[in-house]
Amino acid sequence: MSVLSEFKAFAVKGNVVDLAVGVIIGGAFGKIVESLVGDVIMPIVSKIFGGLDFSNYFIPLAGQTATTLVEAKKAGAVLAYGSFITVAINFMILAFIIFMMIKQINRLQSAPAPAPAPAEPPPPAEDIVLLREIRDSLKR
Image 1 (cartoon, rainbow, N blue to C red):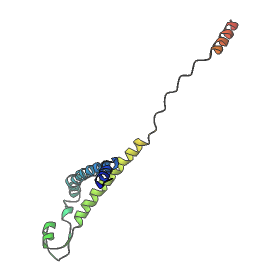
Image 2 (cartoon, helix red, strand yellow; image 1 turned 30 degrees about the vertical axis):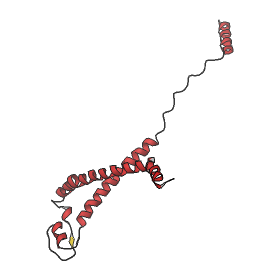
Image 3 (cartoon, one colour; image 1 turned 90 degrees about the vertical axis):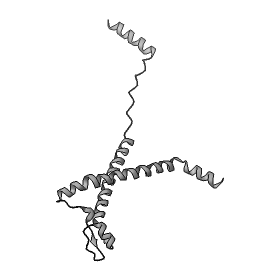
């Protein structure tokens, strides 16, 4: 078997295709979470804490005196812990959402199938029916 045919057999397996789809969807979902944190959550946090902007929280390591992170990076090395805080919040939100999705998937997969309706009992045998008729006629 040639290397090309082996690769083709490997690439079209369900697991590889599923993984590729998952990576693509995960990348797009990461962008959504990044926008949620950067455009919705962080402005609210900033408003609550008096207008602070985490993106400009840094410690200059080269002794520079800059007011923004961009200026500080141009001047030398910086420890941008504000960016780290934002990325950590992104991660926590993404991890929580994935946890909730997996929890729901597991709940749906482990849900027991509904019990089938009880079957109608079979009709009594002919001799039983005959004996009941005799009994009923004797009672009269």
